[in-house]
Image (cartoon, rainbow, N blue to C red):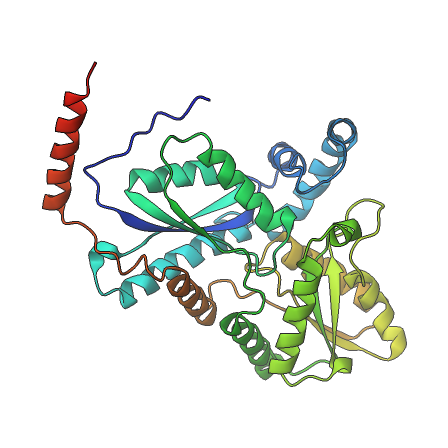
Length: 368
């Protein structure tokens, strides 16, 4: 085993780090950038669970020769002057969380270092963890911004973190948030965002709660994602005092020919007008930030399906992004997860200097 050559720094006092992570984004809305991004994303065995040799042939022989151009056109429709919406929102969430932590902190020396990273693309988890360790982080809380757990998202994030740690001689203390699909503050933030949208735009005939899909066999193999999505929908509906006929849970973004989690969001929207439902509003509780799958797939593509089928009024309710209530929820979740760590006293600079001197003397006496 070859370890990375970073050494434990006795001079640094221990800091707490909070790392927000999300799925990822290409560097630009171009065919070349999408090919690089999709190659990394679709090569992850957590994302595509098929025999590796067979999938390598399909990925490199077919998908990476066709899909990058199509995906680049889609990304171009949501790209902004500042870059990818997902990267913009995730960076803003980290910045606002850091500010909120500074307001509630009782000791500036114990103020957590807050950073963000992407599972695929940049900034990478590996590079960001390295920077945090360089800043003195010795206790690390990792918060993947996926409310519902899936092996393909949260599990894959842990894989990346674990793979990085296997290359390090010294690793920090670690806490990892697997999911928060039923956290009361998360449910409240979702419900209030829907209420606010209703106050500004009126209420539609049906509320659609759309989640990213997964192959059905992942559920049969024990992935809890489907159950957690349904639980989130039930809790949000209860918070909004909705009856069962007032809302529908659907799953979007299926890929390939095999059966995925159902019902499919696009099929729901194509069928509703014939059943007399002429107005719908769609919210995506599995997405902490607006991105291609919400802005283009739900905001444009599925809107067209509904209107072409005879629908009259279609609304997309934005993701929580960096709204005040979402940031306050993230703050609460972090405080809950940091219990015990925040009570540990951080050394003064003078104490760290003394410890470094003792360590240096000890190391000198151990020289061969």
